[in-house]
Image 1 (tube, rainbow, N blue to C red):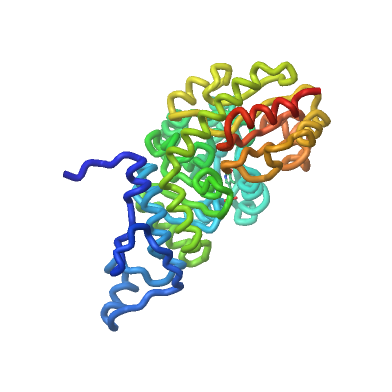
Image 2: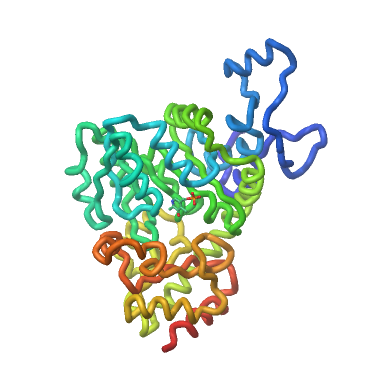
Length: 390
Ligand SMILES: *Cc1c(COP(=O)(O)O)cnc(C)c1O
């Protein structure tokens, strides 16, 4: 019997074949290349007549193990691992688009992805049109004869808005477009966009997949023929994940489910606490009933994730004061770490945008983003509470 295993089991038992040493836990294969038995073996490997590793820019046992786990968790056919999340996103566009193509994207996407759309892809004559999260009914009107890809993240960064994956999947199918979803905030544990019609799912493995703020990584998974294109592009352009990072990340996946369960439990408590604080205008968390897309979040996510956003009374100054009063939580650019991290986008990551442009992506001056960690919930809330007191 070859029953499909559960998520937690795939993350633990999907393992590279043991070496002659019968190690229990997969070792690190730090090798740039691999050897062949004879001329025929070498010929066959280069002709891809076998599955042998040739060179670690193409594949390596550690990256293969990491990718195989993500493929199983996302319900994908195939995948490829990258040095960073941005390498995964850029290589997906590089492999699947050509000059003259067009993208329809949600306006709220990760900062560097937005820079790709506005600064670099236009150099290759690839343009992007945008829809806001509350304007999904406009998506079809943005589609042009040369549109190839619909692109979105959900939940979005930093405002944790939710886009309806089922709706995006239907629109992509109807117009014969590729749906590419950045699933970084949800992880494959909470949400599998392929079920709703995504063709490619990309991740920054740097965030919750590592979960401990140690290594960078990225991965793209999806349909076999598309991943083949992404693989060929990447094996020639060189954004491969290092074996060491793949080894770390594959171990991280073994604990993804238990970690993310706890992250979500803590985040919901933080969101509920903030909802009852009089210095807070509003709180957004996908699994709070007050979230505008609560029903959609419930439909497509297992739990609400670890990111909570809220707005302080008092704009930019209040945001800066809040950060200065924080004692335990970290002021840092990462997210999805064991350590709780607070950021104030208007004075940091998004300070170069005008107030109007910030509002386009739902960033008000008093918006604070919390990546809720795994410390004891009372300690997290105590720190936030003392920082929120006037
Ligand atoms: C961090 C992040 C990325 C980029 O990932 P890197 O590993 O930093 O290159 C892409 N998308 C989202 C949603 C992210 O949070």
